[in-house]
Amino acid sequence: MTDPLLTAALGLDAVWPFGAIKIELPGKTLRLLDGASVMTIGGEAYAGSDEDFGTIAALDVISEGMGDEAPEIQLSMYPSDSAALATLCNPAMQGAAVTIMFGAADPATGAPIGQPDVLFMGAIDVPTMRTGQRVVEFTIVSEFERLFEVDEGQRATDAFHKSIWPGETGLSEMTGTTEKLYWGALPPSSSPATGGYTIPFSGGRRYPEQSYV
Figure 1 (spheres, one colour):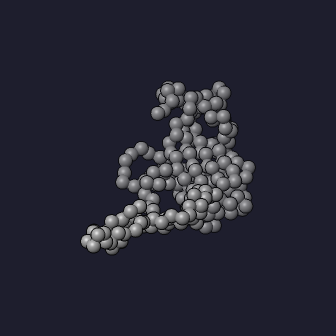
Figure 2 (spheres, rainbow, N blue to C red):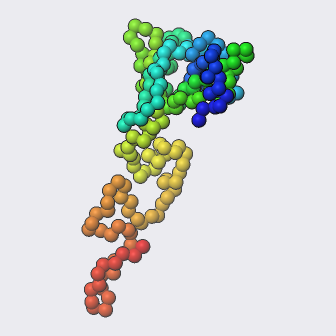
Figure 3 (tube, one colour):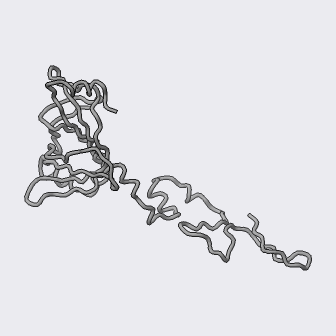
């Protein structure tokens, strides 16, 4: 929901709109504005340029709508130097959280009016370097992209468990169990679904096989 103060400001004849982007990289959080300015938003300092990573070059137009695919946008940056270029193109940047905001500033103070509206929240999917140019393009996918993830490759093993929750030893310390766990498949029809033992005879007459846990 848009802040009422921001809504009122956008209805004025003269308004100073701005865009702000927050990119939470593994080693540093970038807080950038779409112009040469400095502003405090939610207690955090945003600027038109980051001394380590450069400035915003371009951003796709963001529009509201419904579709059958998770939305994605393109963000381009001018890295400050070759080292910044190499860091931004590193595969480790994939998955970094990105928040894109739109707001209005008070011409007298330069401070934002109300709370900026969050237009898009997502994560970096693919960083790409333009050939012959010092420009990095990011494909940013929406948080809804997680709804399309599948569970292929998951395993009920200690190694896979720790790859999701590092240091969690629930599976490595689970010993002495007799139940068989069929991961991603139904148990064989020729064997009981649970562990136990079978009583084949009683009093000279055969009973149906029974499984006891």
